[in-house]
Image 1: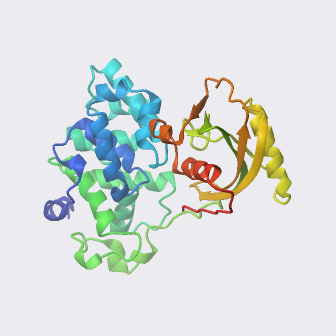
Image 2: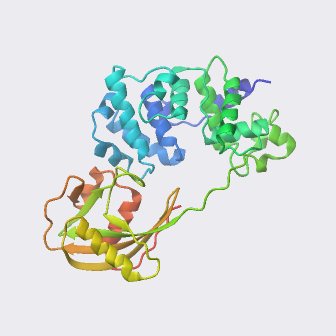
Image 3: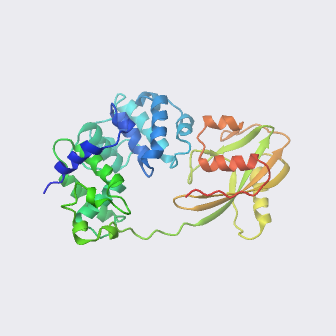
Length: 358
């Protein structure tokens, strides 16, 4: 039995009123899809609205600097998405006359867009008969088909996407993809799904077999490595020194200079690392004091930053990857919530402070 008719009737009755669904455009679809990756709708909505107000078109986004884009992204996390979005906009303006290409294959050739984003934009924005499989969709399709293999395996995700693609109707393929996502987000949730309210409860194999709570199965996650770093909150008067991060965690954003502390025992080790970091950024320490620690749990690591306030007598000239900024000036730069916490601790009174964000 095709699932599209029941699913689309349910979607028409219950779909959420979201800003990217009002007067939709391919550009709005692209922005929303990148923002929504690994981020909840409730978190994304205000960021999306601010972003579209500042960059209403592909051309305006392509003309913006990376700092302007990441500044609006600050706090949303996964900053590679912001850089990828801007890269895609630049390519679309330069190679496609300022518009997004209309096919899944051509969208996939834009820098920074992966297979999921290409399929989602092709289906939702251009009506291509394809299926975009996100985490919500994978859960829905796995339960519908009673698939007990781990959805983290590429072979399983391929199987689930093929199953979804077979169900895509010739009309409204974009709404079908959104309806599957909506079902996973609101009804077919990871825990305590509302099966009695599900429009697909009749054909659902997991419900029939009583295995809803066991599906989807996930591959056991590797334990996050625990990392300890020393952050140097270098100040001169009211200004603080920020550096642009290179590759790796929070790449492309601005943060306090830091380095890994290899010793997990001696408290003096972090102090020594902070002094070395100060020397590496070209400043001479006048005062150094420990202000406490900030802990943040990222997707792939558990980081504790020992924050040291370092006062310098002379600021010196900042290098290309450095900025002396007043705290208010951080609003103009791409600064993560982790960096905001370390700066606040470094500029505050000397105290112990442990913050955690999971």
